[in-house]
Amino acid sequence: MFPWTYGWIDTERTPEANTRLGMALAFVAGATNAGGFLAVHQYTSHVTGIVSSVVDSVVLGHTEVALTGMAMLIAFVFGAMASAVLVNWGLRCRLQVAYGLPLLLEAALLLVFGVFGGVMNYAYYFFTPLTVTLLCFIMGLQNAVITKISRAEIRTTHLTGMVTDVGIELGKMVYLNLDPQAAPVQANTDKLRLLGKLIGSFVLGAWIGALGFNSLGFVTTVPLALILLYLVARPALNDLRRYTQTLG
Image (cartoon, rainbow, N blue to C red; front, side, top):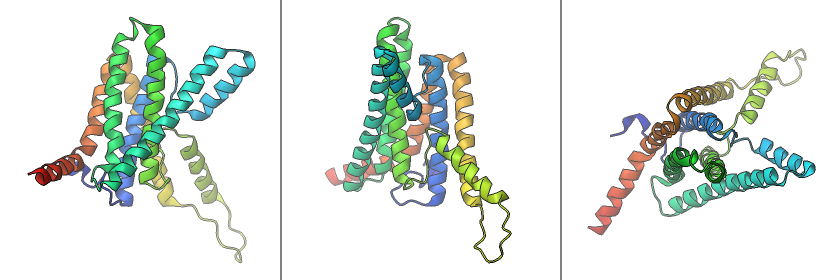
């Protein structure tokens, strides 16, 4: 059962599993971020922009905008905190699904996001701030879990760092090693391939998410949640089976 994702969420990690999981999560993050922008007119994974917006709003005296930005920043941090708590608790309990616990929570919250979206038109000024902070929490949650799994080698919710790393490696690639006595400057082609896969997955997810939200609305969150549930299904069922056997 679930052969396609075998080993992707397991506590015993491999570089291949990290890459595949990173691509899947980058796709979900791109779709959520792009769709979220169409829904609430805010990008919710760009912490740098959020902080800059808070400072600008304070200087300009836009208190309401500054408070909204602070709430978004705090929600992102709380999401990362929740991910760390869930993963460490799962590892302490020796659960196969330890790394998947934040993804289970993310799947549930994506469905909640869909519910908020369905009622947003009836109480826009009440539900929009909740939706924005919820999306920031989700982005923090997801970015923290893949960061912990890959030991900070992979990020999935924003592209700034990845595009910067691509530029660095391309700079190494075109560097002219004219001094035969010096150690040659060489690009890390494996890293370039990984970055290309992650960026491509994010862009594809953003494209499909934008199309989905534009044509179908908030129901687009349902397949995104199902992707996450599919990723964690096998280890979660294994843990549940082991738990029921201990009770029996």
